[in-house]
Image (tube, rainbow, N blue to C red; front, side, top):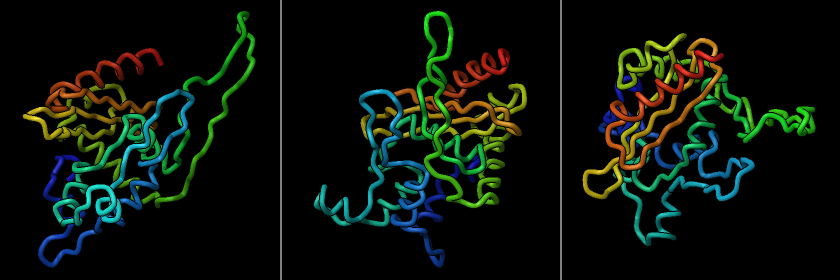
Amino acid sequence: AIGLSSNIFFYTVGGGYGNIKGLGPEKIGEYLKKFGFSFLTNIDLPGERMGLVPDPKWKRQVKKESWFVGDTYNMAIGQGDIQATSLQLAMATAAIANNGVLLKPRLVKSITDFQGRPVLNIEPEIVKKDFVDFKSLSIIRKAMHLAVTDGYGRALAQIAGSAGGKTGTAQTGIGNNSHAWVTVFAPYENPKIVLTIMLENGGEASSVAVPIARDVLEWYIGKN
């Protein structure tokens, strides 16, 4: 389902269908928050936004409306009132790639003086870890690899060491516009880089965002 971007599968998992009981908005929201969504990453840059993970209480208070199963279906595929930054998605993707360690993003690794002598080394800072089991993460990594080998991210399959990724074409509700997303980690077996690209009103992710990701990853891997 991840490999082929099956909305129907995730509608069912999230909101249920027939005899299948869905996770519901609270459980979906719980895990989105575990991965850092709806919180500031506290990167050392100004102007960061928190994003939004909606729930029935929020909708009653803010929109003065009831929550419907259609809201849960939208939530299950990252649509509706969900808001996320590219940095939050990159942070979550890194946690999937590194076996469940959510790291605080930083702008630089070290600071030196004019002579190149180190003034300050920025050590990695763990936000949380062990919040999801390794077996589940392994399944998701394999699924993201299938998205590259057999799904909409096939343009990434030929980079050295292959990759794991997920595309997204997010409707905006304004005409036929959609935002083109892709998030990817590479190489697949021993990830060194996570890259998240979002092109506002860019159209189909597979035709615009994925080729950009491929070019960046080929450059990065070629130099490292």
